[in-house]
Image (cartoon, rainbow, N blue to C red; front, side, top):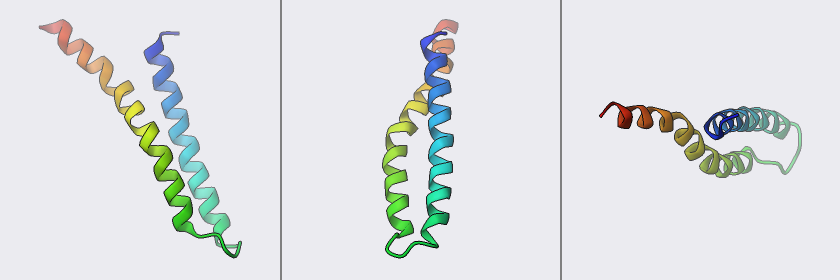
Length: 71
């Protein structure tokens, strides 16, 4: 498997896991005292700060490579 394909798949999987975790913990926070939805969103935001650029690079990397090859 090429490295760019690995990054594309892994970043997509990480995004899906983060969304599922956020929804699950947000739902769970409705039933547990002391757990605040804002805390869940802060943690998810921190994770997405690392996963987002990786996903952007995996998406735009091949596009930029094609544009360089066309010139």
